[in-house]
Amino acid sequence: MLPYYIDQSEEKLLGSGTPVNQHELRCGMCARELYVDDEGYRRYHEATDSGLDNPLRCDNCSDEYDDLAYEG
Image 1: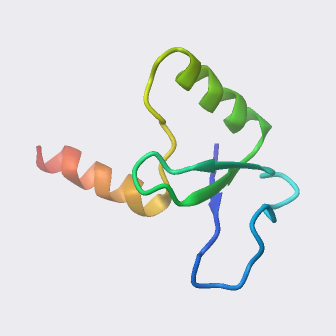
Image 2: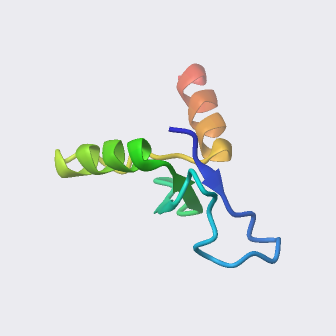
């Protein structure tokens, strides 16, 4: 699942996504709009339906999370 996000500083319409990444979801940390493919969308819903928190993170939050986890 490779998310595609909208840079809010750019003039883009919501819902644009890409032909592959059509499903809009939100980053679990910063709530930035992300677009995922069908497989990513299915895995997201399986995780949330089973009671897990939103597992999806944008690139910036993923890097920050990895840094915090490494530093302990």
